[in-house]
Length: 284
Image (tube, rainbow, N blue to C red; front, side, top):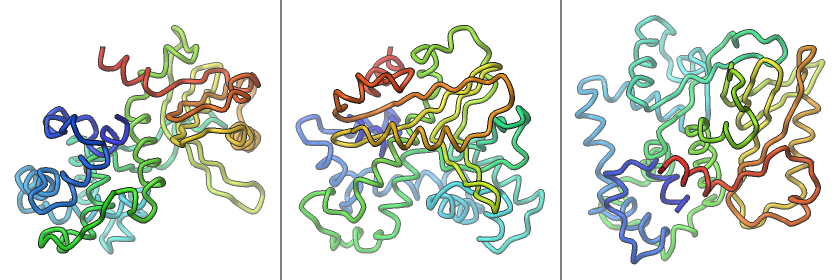
């Protein structure tokens, strides 16, 4: 279920193409990696119809973001264009269309808005298509890109892990009632990244939810077996966070996979959320 949602984003029209008699892997192979695949042909047709003459420019922005989040200045430098109001308008229209998100949020150290927005490729279908299908488009179009299973593709587990993370971040409101936020005001909910410097180590958090008194450090994991090492990873991230006075920290794990019983019993996480319950909740 999550593999299919992670590559389609849960778009109803795309889900209609899924054959329930086939495995998730075979559905993905059939829809994305064959010349007649509906989702192999969909992106270019849809993108050209929406953006017309500027589709190529906007696609180049998405291609740059497929490798990871970037600021507007970083994007402009990578694409070799001026970081002007015209370029910002391209970013705004992509955000309005749901293709990208500007993850700013609050700085947990100061409680003030982050000085620089970092743009993330938000749409899961676009993200998967540009990362995995676009580079092999010519071979796929002539039926030359063949494999027995998508699991043979290089870095398949990592690709789906990042897609799953993006899926959960996009649905962060579904998490709130399950982690003890209650009626507290949510001041910020976004991925958080602080680069390293000479004086301190960097930190990257999948999702940081902030209320006036509490910071929720949300770790998102998709693995066959999720062991005790995830608690050590999150604890290191918590240590690197420098919070303003009076703030408390609550670590949260959202997962897809088999949870090590020791992890459930150690009491480190304030909440352990099986992602299947989140999706079920959003469907209801």
